[in-house]
Length: 41
Image (cartoon, rainbow, N blue to C red; front, side):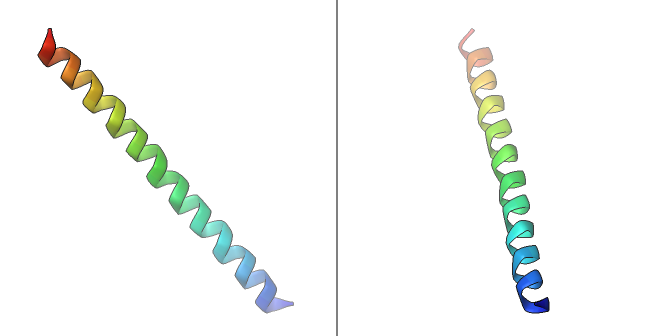
């Protein structure tokens, strides 16, 4: 049963890390669109 818990914890940790990276990527994309709009104006 301990091995099963370790696997579940590892999966949860990997999802959390992937989620943080996704949020950072979306933030960078929005920022780059805003900068491009500023340059165009």
